[in-house]
Length: 254
Image 1: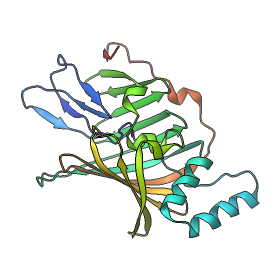
Image 2: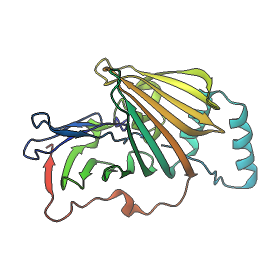
Image 3: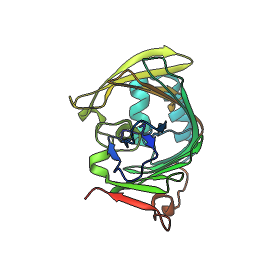
């Protein structure tokens, strides 16, 4: 994904330049911080719920296929038949050390390939926008915008599966992972050795992503659940444009 799901650690010293690495931003300030996780992926993230196929016959065919297909087949069908989507998400991040979980909620919208808007409403307000060329991360609390070239932020990440092209096999080894929690799961392992993720799992129901779980090299696990997902709605192009607010600090990778 970008990596989006994606977890920047928020620090209060805005004089230190944050760095987005596959969807993660880290800013050091001597230890005074508030952790925050964000998904670009897909984030995550990507995700669709109501089918607006051309014609009733096509919609019924998709539904019938999804009801009997394995998770990998559902992923392929989702990628080939979904140009745009929008919905809501909840995210829970836990660490191997047993620290208190971080919970957040928000909304997303995407247009394949490479355009999305991922908004965290709670507990902190953040906006992540990809316009097809650049990735913007706006932290309202810090009044700070970080800008990164999209080509360096998206590959080998959860977002590259759900928001990118259909060629996920080039960047991931993908396999069916069985059924749990009422979802059919795939597991995707990055081919790149320097990926921040050890594994990415996506759960499908009726051809639509219902959840995504990411495990990084430090044992941190991010679990996202998707709701009210709408497939192929008409999306205003303004959703994928971002103008830094007046007075915001803008930190850009050239």
